[in-house]
Image 1 (cartoon, helix red, strand yellow):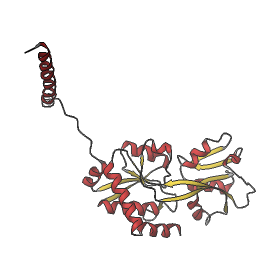
Image 2 (image 1 turned 60 degrees about the vertical axis):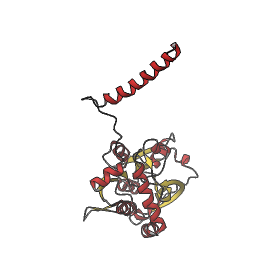
Image 3 (image 1 turned 180 degrees about the vertical axis):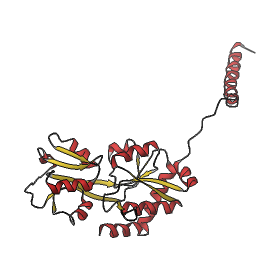
Image 4 (image 1 turned 180 degrees about the horizontal axis):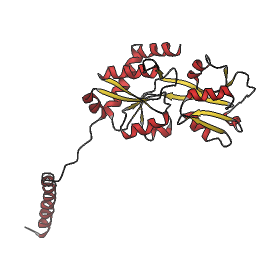
Amino acid sequence: MSEGSGRVMMSILLVIGLVVGFGVGYMIPGLTPPVTPPDDYDVITDRGTIIVGTNSGWPPFEMLNTTTDELYGFDIDLAELVADYIGVTVEWVDMDFDALIGACQAGSIDMIASATFITAARCEVLQPLCWYIRTNEVVVVKANSTLTISSLDDLVGYTVGAQTGTTEDEELSEIAGVDLVRYPLVETMFQDLNAGALDAVYVDEPIVALYSTVYSIKIIFTVTAPPTAFYIRYGSDRLSAAINSAIAEGFADGSVDALIAQWFG
């Protein structure tokens, strides 16, 4: 055998030795081969429930019946539709809105169903599913207020309420000079508006319908909002496909449109 052939043979034997060595290494006690984590879809179907986080008090998306202690609303019905499609039941977890992202990242909930807009910041940490409705954001004042604005920047110098962790909160936080007051509960925010502690509130337009039956209020400015979607963790391809298929089929057979008509008129 020539010297060159010898070098080639040695190289081949070295590679074979490394491959065999790695294979044997996985069989040595105490060494565990890499394991691909299960898709959340498998975890959920094995468990028989999907754990969904929401924040009640945001009508007509999610509300709490204080008599029965049951959640109801558009997002509630849509999440139940998704669960039926997957073949599981929903375990609801009602929490502050600004805690939902962290809870989903940590795995204490599987999905967020809480009138959550699709934003770049949220998409950096969680996966949005196909969007299902688009609404507006509005600035609301008391009916006898003389405040008028042509942009959010015109709120500089005024005291404005927003729910903690919402897109409205984020948008107003970027405007220097706005006296922003954050509220975990929207109900408290409207109470303060009515009492005169706030000059205005910045919220999703659909919730104004309910509070206008309680307080004398009016909308003075409207902003087109991003679309709304459910969120899950990244890396669950089968789960995202199943939820997206459920929503797509819901639109195809008219179920989602029926829910929109029921809850938004």
